[in-house]
Length: 274
Image 1 (cartoon, rainbow, N blue to C red):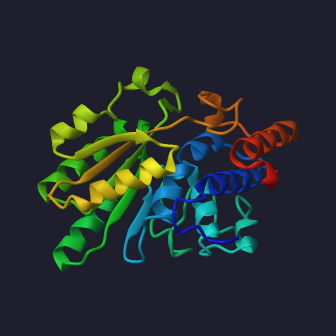
Image 2 (image 1 turned 30 degrees about the horizontal axis):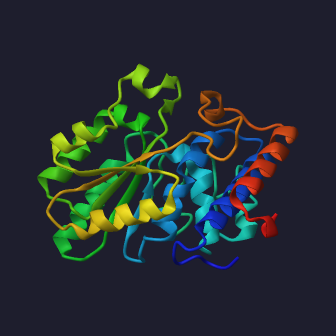
């Protein structure tokens, strides 16, 4: 597969990575499909298109691990042979990311609320040694229920960590229902602006807008940590999964997999790719 280094052909890439993601879940007969489909475009924009060698990327919403594995496979950091072991006994690619197995996975994540504290610490270290590294932390909107998220946010503001870029996958659903109904909408501009973050809202499935927003935020070296609130759709690309909470958990049947494969192919590929 040819690596995409710009945003010229990202629609095809969005389709290719979704198909690989669905194949992984189908082979493993595993859940957490919807949340992976909602954040895969955020990973394309950051991990594939904007992360540099000296930067760090943390998937704090570790239950979407398959999307991380798929992107690292695309980048050549995880081989096809290793990717095929996803979810199997003894694999280095379990349901939630495990540390010290692959270069692109420096920490275990999945217990929500840990990614931002770790990322803020890495960003602080970068400031102390005076390098130009950046830290990207991808969180879920439900993760803003966690107290550690807010402690880390205040830490980041106190230490003027403008090298920290937080991305919230705001699909409006979490494990027990609508985020607005569980603990209220805490993934909102007003709350994060009040703490002191530079905050922008963007369509989380538009790669061009995502990259432009990331570039705009990172170019503003003003002592404020950055936040990109991405409006996303859980299960994006598969009609029967979109905006359905149950696809946080359910595996696909073979018939559902075939339908998902067909829908993604039709939505993301030009006719000559079909």
